[in-house]
Image 1 (cartoon, one colour):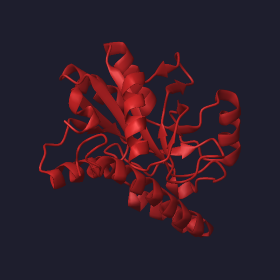
Image 2 (cartoon, helix red, strand yellow; image 1 turned 90 degrees about the horizontal axis):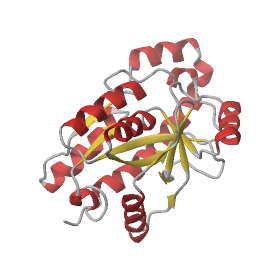
Image 3 (cartoon, one colour; image 1 turned 30 degrees about the vertical axis):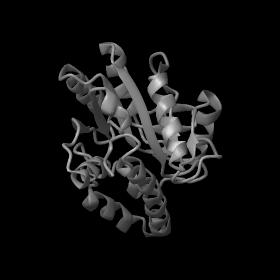
Image 4 (spheres, helix red, strand yellow; image 1 turned 180 degrees about the vertical axis):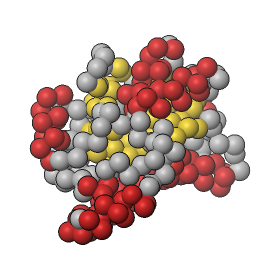
Length: 238
């Protein structure tokens, strides 16, 4: 099969419903069944629960797929990170599947994508300020952060399965996240628009920052969509 993950039984965990939709659309266009898929809604605990269930159902590899926040100032919105190691505040660092990562890295580069390597930090809370990002980058050396991958990695490690991390940068290291963007994701991975709009109403000066965040997140989604849809990359969904 042309898709990288066609050689193993795999499943996918995302943080956002929109990220899962990219995968579903890619498979629909290709006339193929969507792989086992779960959305964790920005929660490592839910991500671990979903990944544990998917592995019990037969997944040999669990893929954490979605957006991340930049910690390394060199990473820009839309940049693609294939993590080598997942680190968190608790537990030992967990490496990804090196053979699968190397294979995918080569495929992505052949497709014209620029690929970044390095460590990914898992956080149980949003990393919202420039100062926090700078501090975490200095302390951990992790190049980016998300709120699901460490849960996925912990489940894979506990079950003896493999993990692969594919993340695209949304907010860069020099950007504070506006208050209206914090806690805006529900348990189902959908945006809680009423809550966000209420916060924005109370903090109208954050409007430009929200617009900028939406634009930068769109750059990340564009990268993820390209990865999901290319028939020679992950899913064979082109």
